[in-house]
Every structure is written in structure tokens, then in C-alpha cells.
Image (spheres, each protein chain N blue to C red):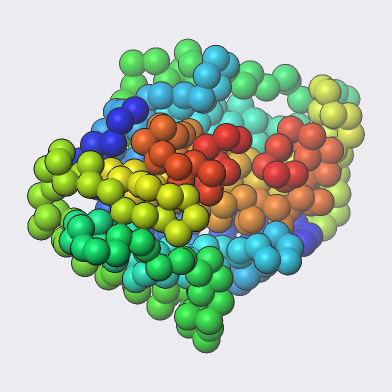
Length: 174
Length: 174
């Protein structure tokens, strides 16, 4: 389907509560393991979406809306959360995510974007020309992708425990 | 990691709230589309985990615990929710899931299972001999798998809207 600001916000405003329902108070055995080298644990996924609130979506939208001389986004650090989340608790990260997301959605709503603005372009350092509409769609899809990834890394902790049922659980071998 | 009843319950007791945070009040455009023929929408995923509460996990655990003459489970209907959810709202299904899950966890806790009981066996109609421990592990992994699947089918609705970012979103082509 096409991007629609109200549909996008409906997802974006729910994500912090979804992470909270899934992770708040959960034993560490579910939260800290990852899927192997250079992959994210549930904790890392949460840190990663937080980094996006600070460095990616709204800052890049500002670059597009400004239509200045340089419209090229700063490259995004996929592993920034390894540094930024260090020493923090899940409870702290859940609060941080909720606060940053609320603030960013207030900014987004305040812009009251027109179709003309949504069609404005920026330059992604690797992907080339992109529109504001595509950026905001990606924000939504990125949330859902990391919810799926968080559920997956947790499910994999029971890869051996499920025994023969592994054959019916494709998520275990993804 | 190995199955542990308290770790398993920590996931099982959260899942209804995760589905609620994700789906309650969400526009239908996110809830009703699926990934193609014979696949599940977000609505179908919710109906499917409800059917599991009624027909799968606890009923099969009872068969194992009884250690009767026949320990073979009834085959599981992966598409039962197409019939059972018909005409119901998301709000209704969320309440139904929460109520059934709470009831089933009360049953599970009441059993106070010993290691010996967790090692008891049943016969899966296709997979062969399985233990109660494996069944309960699969209940947990199945929850997480359907949370991931629900997030994925929703993300895919923006497969085209994200433009060139699709290359960075493996979930779109899974």
C-alpha cells in the first residue's frame, strides 16, 4: 500500500509499548543472547531503535525539508548502540525509547506535511536519491523489522529445547 | 538454552499484552492483509495463537501427563482460525486470547511439574516421540514465531513504499 501519514503514525506510536510489553522485567536469559557474531540481542535491538530516534529518521527528514546545498545524509552506524547502551538496563532503555519517540512524533505531527513536502528528495550515501515519503515509510518498516528480529533472537534460544518441532518452526533457522 | 518453567512462563504470560500493544485500535490496512495465498494476516496470526490455547498446548500436555493407552495427539488444524475468527473484531480476539492464556497458565502453574513429569513422552502424529519439556518449549517458541510473523506481514505492506531502502530490509523478501 502507499504511505499514509496517519497509518504510519499508528505504528510508530505503538512500538515503544510493544517493546515494553515484550521485554520489561523479562529474565536476562531472553534479553542478552544474540544470534552469533555481529548480530543483535533483544537488548541490542532496543538500543538500535533508540539510536535511530537520535541519529536517523527525524535528522534525515530535517535535511530533506531544508533542501539546502547538501542533501546527503550522514552515514548511519548500525552498531552505535553497542557503545550507547553500555551499562544501561532494559528498563532505562524502554523509558528512553518512549520519551524520544514521543518527542519525534510531536515534531512529525507539528510539520503537518503536504504531499509536495513528502515528495522532496535527499541523498542517501549508499542508496542514492530518496524521498521524504520513502524515509518515513522506512521508519515504520524498520520498527516492525526490529520487533520481528527481537522475537526471532528470543525464539532461537529454544532452538534445541523444542526437539523435533524445529522442523515446524522456520524462525529457528532464519 | 535448556527449558526452564519459570523462563517459559515469563514469555507466555507476556504474549497477550504484546499482541494488544501492537494491534489494539490499529487501522484495518495493517491488520487484514496477508503475504499471499495460504498465509496469515496479523488478524489470522492472532486467531491462530487463540486456537492453540484451545486445541494444542494444554490439551496435548494433558495427554502426555495422563500416560494412557493412546498418547498420540490429535492433528492440529493450522487454518482453524479462518473459521473460528470469522466475524470477530481484533478487540474481541485480544480479550479472548488474554482470557484463555491466563486460564492455561493457571493450569500449568497448578501442575507444579517435576523433572520426571517434564521427561514424559507423547506421540506427535507426524514428528513421532516428543517430551512434555519439548511441547512446552514449543509453546514459547510458537508465540515468538507468530509475533515475528505478525510484524513481518505488517512490514511487507510498505514493501514498495520504502523505495530503495528495500535493499536494507531483508524482512520484505522473507
